[in-house]
Amino acid sequence: MGTSTPDLDVRCDKVADPARPGCVFHKYKPTWVMNFKKTPAAVAHAWLIQSKLPNHPGSMTADKPMKYLPKADKNQHNRDPQKNRDVICPSGWAAKNGHPDTTVVTDIAPNDTASCDEFAYAASYNSGGMPQSMDGLNEVASGDPCVQSYATRVKQGEWHLYDDERIAGPTWQEVCGRSSMSSWINTTSMASFSGAFAAGGKYHLLDADEYWVKFPEFAHCEPARQP
Image (cartoon, rainbow, N blue to C red; front, side, top):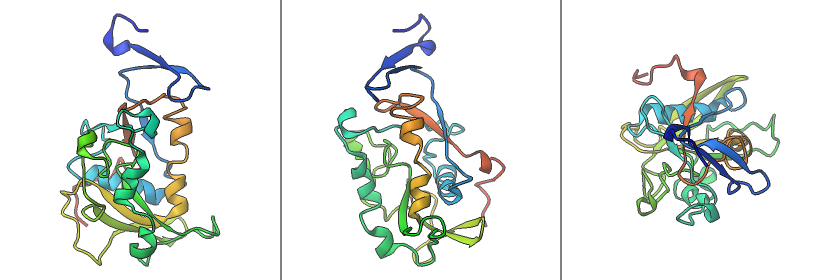
């Protein structure tokens, strides 16, 4: 189904969620905005990686869209996004290797622990864990070559993202980011993505569909400046 103008082609599907079929403008790239108010540390990490690294994952300014990787049975490579995550953030990495000054928010979630946050997202072809043989854009063998950081709450309402000083500092030629931060913050930062934005939500993203990632709260920041 469509019109005579390619940019206005309409795609209708029930692939993303059979219970919620819908239609979208096929060529339109939607914009995902992370929840800064709830999860400032995760947003800061994503902004840093997008802004400073040469591949600029998800950046509209750099014309480097994020490419969506849905569940294994809905992508052409039968690739489970968890496998991408396992490359960058193997199970137990934060407990074993995360920075000891990582802040957990037990005042919000009593059982909160440190976790591993990655950017670009595991559910994307931009992920460092996505093999090049499966159209991955930034393949690495592990999360070790990524920019390494950790998130600390300095005081209520103020978070800082620091380089992990236990290893060599970033060159800013890396292709991915890995940060030790609160599990609650990490998971909450993407909680509404699948249901309210991508798979069964507003934009019906299918395999390799492109979208932008934007951080309005950081619009005034200059990533080229050195601290």
